[in-house]
Length: 207
Length: 207
Ligand SMILES: [Ca+2]
Image 1 (spheres, rainbow over the protein chains, first blue to last red):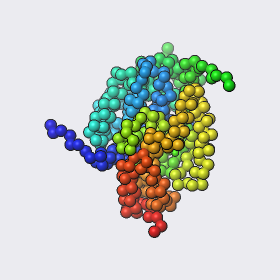
Image 2 (image 1 turned 180 degrees about the vertical axis):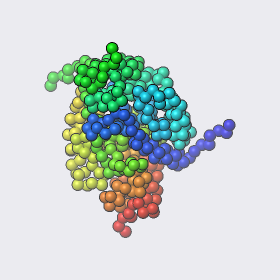
Image 3 (image 1 turned 30 degrees about the horizontal axis):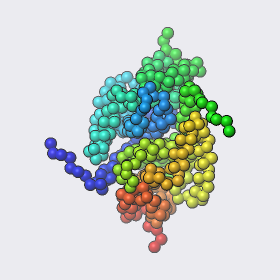
Image 4 (image 1 turned 45 degrees about the vertical axis):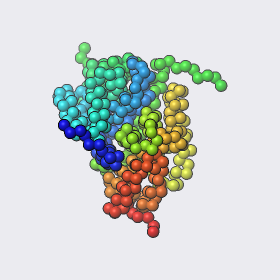
């Protein structure tokens, strides 16, 4: 293999700006959750911002301390870029979840490939780390990524749960891995979804 | 003055979640720029995400090296929260810019005040640092905050410039401080806005 050519700073900047322009498309990828005020569908760019802010605010609740918050933020800021090509997969959509990772890996190759080679490799490694959920940083990111839609659903009378007929047992099972990143956040979430059941916003599961 | 009471971890988490729920409102604050695909108005939550991703991608172009990228990302993630109360002020709206900082400071007190006291103080210090533009981190953040809408305008045929009758001389004057954070990004921006004039997307200024 030929070594990668060294890019000039000007060519690096040109590629970086092309990447920044391309990822504007994440603002058009809509999720099943809705925003609290106008109750329209949330998009993945907004979600990524809210999720990153949660990392900043909640880092103290990570089971593992100290956490490399910079690496968590980087993972979070790029974690959904693959949806530009692969679309958003709803957390309870078991059919589309089957080949989700394969579809997203193809997207990662194209989208991160717009960057200079060193950054393309760095971004791919961050995305792989997030997906593998094997480091404390990835486990805490995964915890907040799951807590975020649960919180928005609770703040909007269970909107996405109601729409898709999701029951309490499924919410509990799908999100229990939050505890691997943060016991405190999972305990909070368990109380929150119990309250959603009590309020009639989330249907109880089969007895 | 009484010392601040020490909050329990559970009470800290309760306040932090209340803050996270409140800031969902940033998704309803609309800017003058439009997104590239559907050409609807961009909101400040999406802008904050795109801006944070730009920091990650472009940090090497900061005049000052090494940069504390974690502190820049934290500033960027919170920089627009004050708009929840104060609204977005268009960069060329000289009338509303006069009391913008005063209005935003009142908002900062309320919104950051939802957090536990230590985080409230940390977030206020980050916002003050961003606003004062006196550190390398704040200057680089300011450079990307200005570059972002210029880039979106160039990608949308000069939409916000055309709508408000903004001319090349005003764009140049308003954004020249980008060079304080990054000479390379400013040079790129100068070529980009010159091209926008050549394409007829940005009106030349008075001769
Ligand atoms: Ca702003």
